[in-house]
Length: 143
Image (cartoon, rainbow, N blue to C red):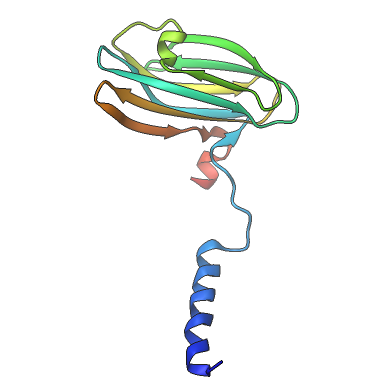
């Protein structure tokens, strides 16, 4: 191959390596304790929540919705088998929270097993926001 053609390819390859790096990326959406930064339940908006057991053993999970001031609005415990999933089209309603409420949701494994979570705020008009779970343990270090 002509040397003049090879140099741009080498530069692109080095830029790609610099952008991706050799170090393994820490996934922010997997952990034993995750935070969904925002959820809502109004006459117009609701929050979908999905949780996936990422561990090789059964996962006992505590889900807790909080008001903006940090007080608990609603909570529940679930158990997911290996590869198990939990879904709620309106998580705040599932937790018994009334209309007109909003705030963050914490999702924690009671037995220190890995999990992941995602939430989407929707309205009758369509999607309004997407919130992947944030690993609380590494958020301050990595994010």
